[in-house]
Image (cartoon, rainbow, N blue to C red; front, side, top):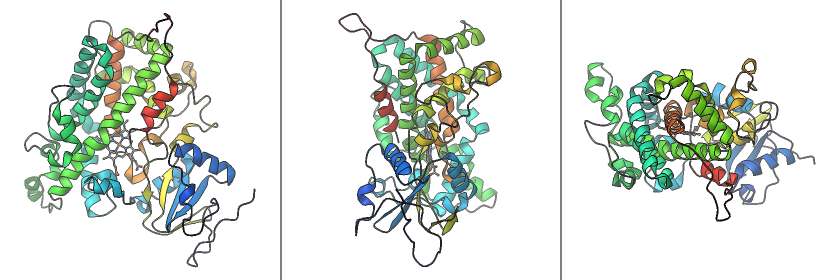
Amino acid sequence: MLISPTQPFKESLAPFPPSPPREPILGHYRKLPLENAHLKHLEYVRKYNSDIVYFNVFGNHMIVLRWQKFANEILDKRGANYMDRPRFVLFDVMGWGLTLTFTPYGPRFKLPRSALQTNFIKSAIVNYRPIQEDEARQAVARILRKPADWDKSLRRFASAIVLRIGFGVVVKSNDDPYIEIATNANLATYPGTTLVDYMPIFQSTENEKAGVPNEMDMADIQGATASVFIAGSNTTLATTTVAVLNMVMNPYVFRKAREEIDSVVGLERLPTLADRAALRYIDYLVEETTGWRPLSPIGIPHKSLQDDVYEGMFMPKGTYVYYNTYAMSRDPSVYKDPESFNPDRYTPKEEGGDGEPFLVGPFGFGRRICVGRHLAQASVWIIMATFIATMELEMRVGVDGKPIEQNREDSAKIASRAL
Ligand code: HEM
């Protein structure tokens, strides 16, 4: 089918990217999928024969990028122009408007982003290792005592880490009220025990000493710390749950991971994050979990600050940019059998693996890339390593004595509910 791209307003001669036909008044409103958006967008790509598809909903311009190359060229290389966010009305109404994920570009974005970034770069997260190792061991001890509650223990693990790091709050039970309180995290900053206390940029005295005006007010500080909980808790939980379910469905992966731990760490002690470099299969397992079903399959949209033309296509100021991470994970020129859960795809070819690259999209792109990605990967790594070192996994057996098959789509749904 031949589709003529919609002609933009007279300010640019370049056309918008190809798009489905528009309805009067509603524009593309009814074309935007509410469920499984990543799959529907792949259909549009095929139907309109374009890897960038354009939508216009009540005057808002939107594009969806199919390949990583576009995300790299637009969101990374031209990142300064694509660092704004659309307004997320629902989150504003919920009082989460100031959490970093939903903050538009501007003074309320810059300082909190740089403060969080400084505290979550690779070299800084080493400081959180004792918290991560301690919480992982507690979680595994709970699962050993009460295996049926494994998912509750993982939930507590995911929340406990970000609560301890963000607010200095130690979670005491699976039903700890702090888990609930922290969902209204704007209320829960505890002077003397929180991230605020460890982040120099938040400390007016430090800033004053350095002659830097302290431009963050209490709302910014609450927003930044709340982001750590809101953005970091369900995402970590969903990732660990999907990893466990995939290991149940792929006993070979579990066994291989266990053998690696037993041979490198031995049987006398538990793995720590210091072992990470020597336990690469666990790294591959974590990468495969985030890539197999990206938690945010079409990303969290960026918004452009100025008009732009990319490969002859016009993208006006204010365009919302989505990136189809799911499609990237299914790129046949990069990943051989993307549906199979196979950590060995990342093992270098010379070591007998497929030598495929890690997927970069699950944590986003450009200047809005996930601030907590290194922390998240370390958390998932340590809970998985501790879990694998201490557990045996078996399928549940039905009344007929046969194992009950785990539904793959259940784990996929868990993944896509997290963000
Ligand atoms: C496996 C776990 C996680 C996944 C898959 C994940 C994924 C994402 C994605 C896709 C984005 C949007 C990026 C973009 O717009 O390009 C994001 C943003 C963000 N994430 Fe994560 N995240 C995870 C864990 C965490 C953790 C543990 C923290 C906190 C310590 C965190 C803090 C944030 C923040 C603050 C933002 C907003 C950044 C901004 O808008 O400037 N995330 N995350």
